Length: 516
Image 1 (cartoon, rainbow, N blue to C red):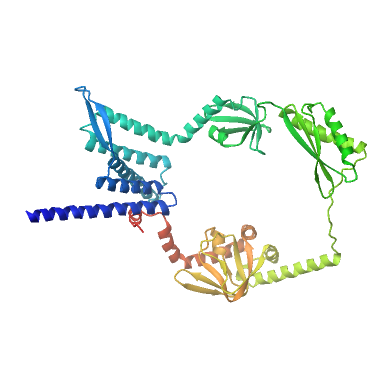
Image 2 (spheres, rainbow, N blue to C red):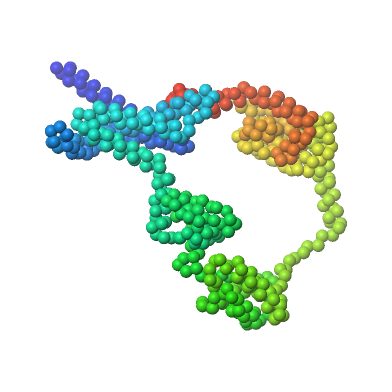
């Protein structure tokens, strides 16, 4: 009997340890999926973590019980059913994990077979179907004897409504926002509104429960979701009153007295038909600029519809009024630096020397010699090239960087660091970077300056691509050299592609099961 008890104790102890290790392992997998997936496996990782935490708490007896009173349709008696919340949440979380894994496996199988990946709606449908199967299984195992089918359908219906609500969150948000806009009467049809302080100005065409349409001043129809309208700084230029204050800034000569300028400006404003007398217009000295005194004319107009005409009329009449009052509107003052013809000649000569040297550097490269490109083409490339100097050991390009230029070694040496600790030394006349420039792929190797530094000529993609299109010999030579280097890197590239391509479902499962 004692041996039986000891065996039972050992069995219970082993099951407790196994459960503790299993739930902890599942929690680690969930955390790893959340942190290292870049958002792609966040839902799966969250489900794993919830299943681990809730499952372990339910296993050790720290469950939360929610009593539910149901009435039987057969005997008209009320029964109380205790629903273990943590256990139920853990089981549904396991069903969610299964749905995510199934949809992911199908997606990876399609992509590994050369097909297109599942769209988000397809993945959501697979996950939802698996979750509903889990709900049915949980009901049949735990609640079928206590809850009627009618109550179960209500529960499933409630879960469906909840999930559909999440899927229609954006649409429902627009609908409720539209209801809020119409209920609060923020604007009416025909009102002039502005999106932001310096944003688009237009007239409200209509506003439904989901969208608001605005006709801009250029006659364009702007359609905005109602939720986006509430998130913007929407200004109604017609409510509560349509009148608006405007400002016109004018620079006047320092020789003119401020009193004279203000008097002229007030006369113009008070005589304009679109400028309101209440509130009265004002004229202030706004700033003392480099070449003029800046005056700020502020006045009110009837509505935004008269704005352009009023501003144009005020500016036009101010020009004539200041001219009649002999008040000057000065030109902006500028400092002009005179360059002698001799200095310009020296700069041009230095440019020609640089271009001639760059042409010679290109001619020394097998890719740009006389047998491949003409002298005019070399001069075009030399004009677009830039000479760059790197110190000893300094990085020139890094593996994985975007390819926007190729390089020709002018002096010194460069060292190419290939996968597998292979090193290739490049001497003057050598070139690198043409493979990545031709294919558009990221850089395949690191290149750094040699022990004595390096001086290279950088040729941007924008200058090399037109030559490739116009010069057949250069294009063929360029492609042949790129193919030779691509074939040399084929084994390393194949290995990298094998690790970087979309994994098979089995490889994905192995990667997912690694907690660290």
